[in-house]
Length: 83
Image 1 (cartoon, one colour):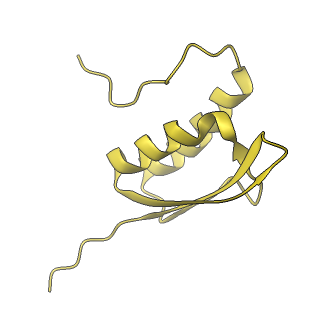
Image 2 (cartoon, helix red, strand yellow):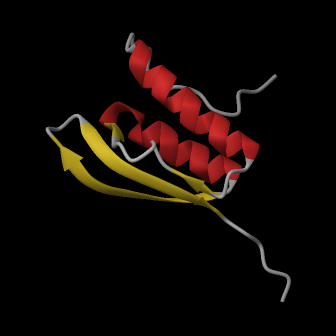
């Protein structure tokens, strides 16, 4: 069995995992727009979120960074057009 998504390190940061898990769950459900409910995400999750968006068909954007710990994040489901 191959992993779809793997964590980039063995971080003991439980809260980073919980945050990622909530966002992953929304993507897995296919929600069109993904945010952290108006809050920035942890910088530790940036690469993981990029990889997840690419695997699950989302385009993503990272914005301003705060205190070297937080970064704005938004993702949108990529819709295929049949033109």
